[in-house]
Length: 112
Length: 190
Image 1 (spheres, rainbow over the protein chains, first blue to last red):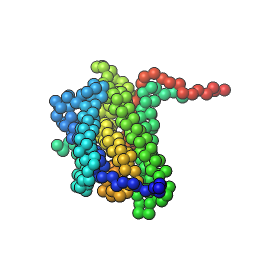
Image 2: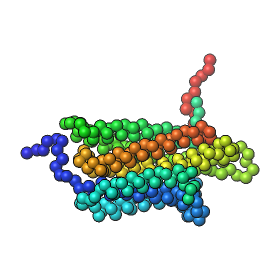
Image 3: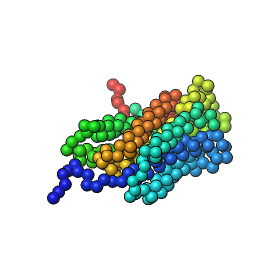
Image 4: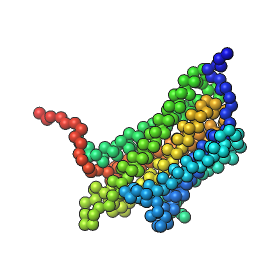
């Protein structure tokens, strides 16, 4: 017997979704944090020059993307078949995203 | 009608990938809301699912193309430093903006914010696309995940808007220009 078109055969665990969302929050925060560090710590800023014509922006963004993908890969592997307590993870992800957004705003980044 | 190679790339980056992303993002927010509202779509939902999957993947591609062309193609031209003794800064947008207190803020706040905040967009929308690819319409049964995905897409819309606004204003105050000139079209005068 075929299933109706709209049916969802199996309830998927929320682990993979929570992993993707939490990792995106971490990646966003890493971006903001690295941007502030590269701007305020001269030595760190020089270290972040991966591609000279683009300057420190190349290293800041490449490292943030690497952090995001690494965290995502690790969490996805651990939570692939698990149901996790999503609410605290998602709340943390949203807070990290907003902090990342705030840290990229130069007048806020200059406070540190 | 003429355009320089640098002007063309700036246009592809901003008006092509960036503006298209912004328009698509407003559509995605409406579609995600429509999909998961209490009295959501009925039997046509499988077609909607496939459409939204493709739509979000295309948005992610647009976001990556926008930040990669911005960071590695246009930005190096923007921040290029003139050789000592060069007084005409029109080909060096960053230096041109910083040369006057009335325009310096467009760089120190506008570009400094734009260059970083824009990278939140591909991170957010890639996450949203991957979650939707995995869960599809069953995301409706995971309310916490669904709300987070919509939240991230909304923040990506804001971030893309900031990047787009400052991109337009920067290009108005100190356009990126130079390189080979491309003749787009010519009309004979009688």
